[in-house]
Image (cartoon, rainbow, N blue to C red; front, side):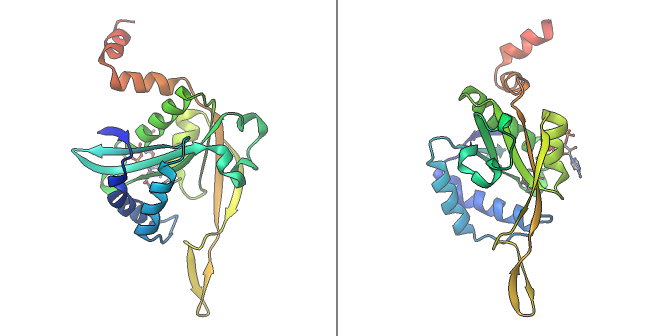
Length: 203
Ligand SMILES: CC(C)(COP(=O)(O)OP(=O)(O)OC[C@H]1O[C@@H](n2cnc3c(N)ncnc32)[C@H](O)[C@@H]1OP(=O)(O)O)[C@@H](O)C(=O)NCCC(=O)NCCS
């Protein structure tokens, strides 16, 4: 598996994976692929964006976006002041179903955090559904983040028909925050640099 930077020509395949992933429970969100593809292009142009894709055997299997927390005002307002300073917001993460539970999601998290740390970020903030235990596990159990807030989110992407009317169905979200751990740099080095692996085995 390889992690690399997003390229504009990835947008269609990535938008298909994204719309499939967020149609699943607990999200149950309906996005148009064109709308998502356009969002990817727009977000990729922001100077603070870290937009990565994961490839397996030459096929894109997942993607991840992060950007400065200041862009996500509703989340920043709920995060304690101690973790809003130089904070990266881990905005999107999605891996296609057949490739899950093989470490792709974690690799996309680690790579974004390692880059963010290199760019001077000190803290990480992520948000997920209260019914998405995998993300909570990856940030809290594996990377030392803690749940700092809950937020009820309504979106026109998540609706149901009630008495012939389309109504939004709110979702309860968890917001997690913490320091970006040093281990993300070590883990990244060990992945990309064979010398680091050889040296480690001699210590
Ligand atoms: C969340 C998602 C990105 C994870 O991707 P992935 O490639 O399967 O993740 P990984 O294989 O790196 O890690 C999965 C981890 O969750 C753990 N896990 C799996 N099912 C779990 C569950 N029900 N509860 C808690 N942990 C669980 C695995 O054991 C593994 O942890 P470990 O490495 O400590 O053993 C993927 O499931 C996905 O795209 N889901 C749909 C979209 C989504 O929910 N995105 C997140 C938006 S916030």
